[in-house]
Every structure is written in C-alpha cells, then in structure tokens.
Length: 518
Image 1 (cartoon, rainbow, N blue to C red):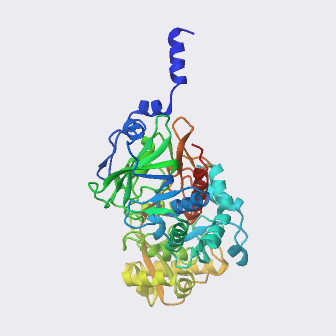
Image 2 (cartoon, rainbow, N blue to C red):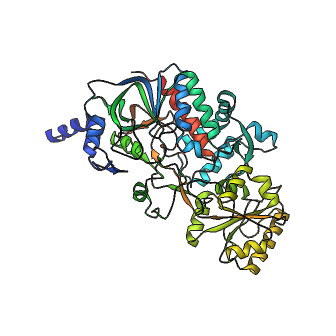
Image 3 (tube, helix red, strand yellow):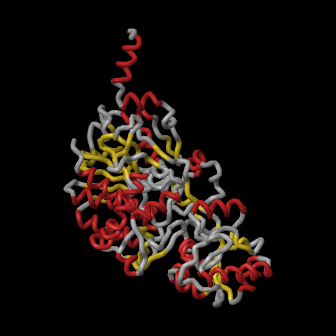
C-alpha cells in the first residue's frame, strides 16, 4: 500500500459526523435553503455552530411538536423521571392531530371482539404492506401493528380518551378504526394535554425551532428557537437557547402545506391541490434535522385524500361523510353517471383514479346508509356549509349535478343488485353485511377532489426511535416520532394508522430519550 493510499485510509477512517456533514455541502440539503420566507443556514453552520455562551432554558428532554406523537413522548419521558418540555410554533397546541378525524386503527381489540370481528396484528401488517406497495420497512410497520391494541388501551385507560364505535377505511380487510366520541382527534389531544399538565410537563407555544445545536462530538445538545413567534411572520420572535441534557425528540409532523417542498418531491402537487392540514404543516424541522446530518426516506411518497371536497377548505366535513359511506353507497363520475373505481380501494388508488378523470366526482348514500354510518355532527355541519347536498329523489340529484339521468338510474339499479348479493361483479368493492340497496329517501351527495393529506416520507429512524445519520449510525441525543418519520407506511398510509403510529412510536421515543446516557 502506497503512502498516499495509507493517508486516504486514515482520513476516511477518522471521518466524524461533523466532517461528513460538512463534506456533503449542498448535496444533503442545499446551503441557504429558503422555506416559507425563512433562509436556513447551510449544514456546517446549522449543525455545528458555536454553543451558546448561555442557555436560557435547561430541560432533560425537549420535544418539538405538540400532536399525538409529541404529547405521548412527553408523558412517557416525564413518567420515566425526565424533566420534559414541549414547544409548539403555532398559537394553539395539537398540530394536525387536533383536527384529524379521530380514527385509531388497531388490531385484536376489545371493541372488535364485542362486534364479532376477527382481526390480528398479522392481518393488519399484511394490509399495511399491501397498501404500501411493500416499500414499508417491515420491522417498524410490524411494531405498529403489534403494539396498536396496547397503544389504544393506553389512550383509553391511562389518558382517559373515549372511543365510540368501529369504522372502516379503504384498504383494510376488516373494520379496525376506532373513532373518538366526537369524530375528532381533539378528544385524544385534549386528554393528552391534560395528562401532560398534571404530570408537570412544560408546554410552550409560539416557540419555533430555528436550528438544532450539536456539540463537537456531534451530539444534539439543544435547540435555538424563536420565542413569541407569530406564524407566519418570520421577522417575529426573539432568539433563545434551550438545552436538552438528555435528548431532543422531533415530532413536528409533515410538510403537506409547503407547496415548494411538495413540488421538489412530486411535481404534480402544485397550487391546484389544497391540503387538509393545518397551516403550520411545513417542513422546516425536517430540513433542520437534515442539516444536522439526519438521513431521510420515502420523501417522494405524498398522500392525497380522495375523500376531500373542493367545496370546503382544509379537512372539512366531507371526509367524515365520504369514508363512512364506502361499501354502503356508490362513487359516481358525473359526466357518465357510472361508477369508475371501487369505493373501498386505498387512498392512492382512489385519488389517482379521480385525478386521471381530471374533475370532481360524487359520493352518495340514502337515508339508511347516511344516518347509520355518518357522524351526525359531520352531516349537519356539511349540510350547513353546502358541501353536502340533500335531495328528495335520485332524479333531483341527477339534475342538480348534470348527470345523464338514464345512465345514472341504471347504474344505481346495478349497484343495488350488488348490495343485495353482497358481491360487486364490476369493480370488486367490499360490500358490508349491513349494507342495503340505495332506495330510501332522502338522498345525500358530496363532490370529491383530492387534497394533499399526509407525507409518508421523513426522517429515517430505527426501532428505538433514534434518528439515523448519513453514516448509518444513530445521531446521539436525537429521536423522532410521528409523521416526521418515514419508512413505516411505504407508498400509502392506511386510514387510522397514523394515530396508532404516533402513539406507538411517540411512547417509545419518550421512554428511550429519558433513559439516554450522557
């Protein structure tokens, strides 16, 4: 071996994370990345800037984000004996979690057994992998499936959240989504917040992460933040430094609201596509982690909700109307009056089918299906806003939407024949045992056009929720949970599995961060 070769071997053998991140330059994340009006520093500056001369706040575990994952992590970290702090950039706590539909998918639960539904973690995992096009990292998806029931029981028995009934989402083999009593994630978020406060967790909103702070060994030791930040004014807020003696947990959600960042990974998703997410669902925490040397995975897989409506902003009420009707009512192309895709297909399948048509479609049901399946408040609010329409006859429905009446009525007759024999010969939709032919007035309908709903990709973390760096090793002092983490869902996340994933890995992150040895 030549002297030059020996020198090269020595250099690469001694390469530290600090050197590695610096060497990436703009290849990991472009230096000076601009996001939402904020110019982020380059990798070396972001990850390895000088330690502050004075820390303004010191805690054991610092959590970025206050949704399901962040609050679950906070509660577990505090119960493990760690002084714990949660920061949230928005003026209210809860992130996307507080506005979601309140569906928690879990397998082998008490509620399922009482309803006579046979389910298992193995079947749930099988469904997750099939929907995810087998791109899921099986080890982590398996943990979610196996711990889903335990996580649900923790939410019920320890946190005090109330779940009222079982619902179905496309792509699942059985009904396994447990819906909160108010059909909203707020039921669980508010109970998590209450428990966190009771335990003495410090909760601070209007506080935005600017950068992660690492020491010379490459360990995350804290964060630079903006206190009194007023979203989305990037000139607002005062700089402060928070020391995390044990670890930082990233639970800041996805980037569905950042159009520029979406376009980097899926050029189709321009301004034509609204998002169901709250306005703060941007990706600056993801980018900050990347600048600290964190590896990412599956960022190109961005989920659109096929059950969203162009007739209301954000998430709205139509998703709660639409998803309760799949398997009970038909989805119709208004130009032809015919069905065009199976109603119980997974989210990607249905969204792609609607986008391929290029215009909004309709979901509908009669009085029996709607009053049996749809949460009353969602129906009432949807009717009040005009996003859901009510008709005395099918002919009135066809006339209102400009549907060819003859073809439409013929298609409804055919749909009803499938419901009667519980088998869809045309599109293989799952017809539920208690479904009935669509014949009982009044009839209800809503228009559907996909909205950006969930970013499956994110940080790459291991089974212990430790964030992995570009050297394939855990970044000391850095954990992550929830939507900011990729690999669990693969190409498509099944409905209700987000809540399970957030609680399962949020708890794991909190427990392990509290045990971090410094």
